[in-house]
Length: 253
Image (cartoon, rainbow, N blue to C red; front, side, top):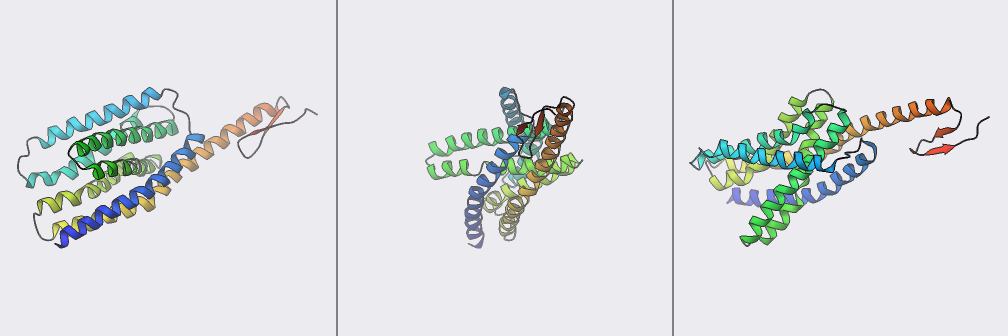
């Protein structure tokens, strides 16, 4: 009984935070879209997104297919967390500008999340769970937030530690329903729900810093580009750049 109550509280908490996380993450994405290198080819992000989702789905099936027992399904959150977070980070491994790779990877995480939400939503809708289908759309930004947290460490020089952190958060986020359903022991379901709530709290409060690292780096890069442009035009005596990213025209002496 305690396990079921904790699971219900966990699900309510996850949805509540998911709504707030949606607004917070969307605000950061809009802000960073203005100051990070643009992704000219929208199709590139879509291609990576579908490849990441398809690759993750195939790998998860290959790992989980041989597992036939209910106890074996305890590995599901672990497999999903480590496989999906790795798949979403794959665009960051390409060469080129670091901020461009950051932006592309975050876009891919969003596409990945939307694909998953749509597929889950369709399945739940046709099984009669309309509320569950709607709630899947609400929590899409968890995927984006986990990726942003991974990329925070990547921008600081350690993609591996970021990947492991995101994979662990993802695993803890997925674990409560599985542990409560299987009920391997009296202790594991409540513990899974508590750890899941802790992972959600960490994600919600840390995502600002995760995006903030990219934002500060993008601002420095933008200021450097403005400085170089100012120096270029100063030599020609015609244009000065204002602090609000705009330009002011001045007459030559």
